[in-house]
Image (tube, rainbow, N blue to C red; front, side):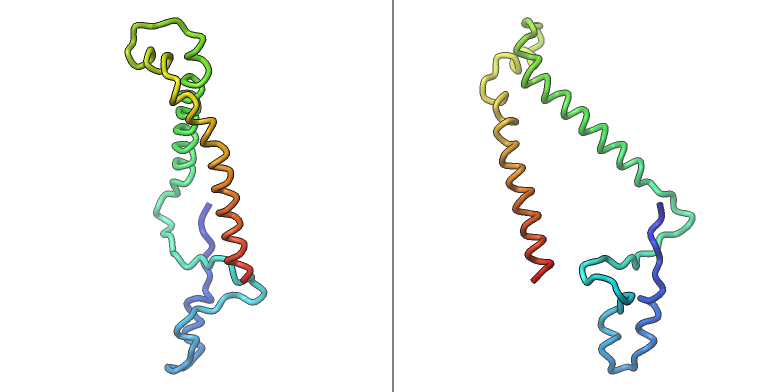
Length: 124
């Protein structure tokens, strides 16, 4: 999906004179909220869109992290000793197996306060 290209940003500076305040700030389209973005970045038609590749990479990394975490938290307790130093260390560990469940409430609070700060910033 390509970004929209608005011609108002390039033509707004031509409307005002040399001393006009319109030269300092690009005008937005009418009836647009003040917090919306202007897509003034031009993307060449020859440049491939790699957004979906970044999405696949993010999804893959998330699934690997989830699988490793679930093994460390749940499955390692039910597995026998394997002889592998890393896997046996995860099985015998009693500290890091509780790290992920403890960070979940902290992450929820961080997201909540981040959202609250954004709302207070936008509406003041």
